[in-house]
Image (cartoon, rainbow, N blue to C red):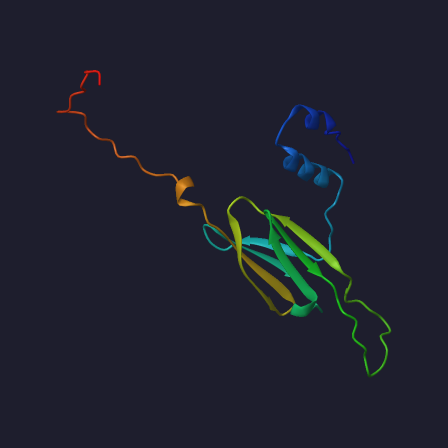
Length: 150
């Protein structure tokens, strides 16, 4: 696999640190395969992140959204089993931390846990000041521009 040295770009640009950190993360292979997840679009400005967290309860999970970063942490608290011992553990119960970079103006609206799947609903709410607005074309017919100095 190729690696790219982005240090010359750090020296010659200002304000692109976040972008270069994302590129570094991708090239260094920071992504983890556990737990698996889906990202789906549920509407024009609505999204849903679904994370497979089999064996975790809502008390074992922590979801935080801060500075355009959604962080999901899971830590399984050991429970004593009264009847027997586990001979083979095929269901992963290891701790994890999964991060998602959110675009500008994307907010978390809710989360639910059902059937071993954690659903996190997101919505993009663009402020009125940033939305495109229609400008009516008016006629200047009949109006004169006054050339007098004030």
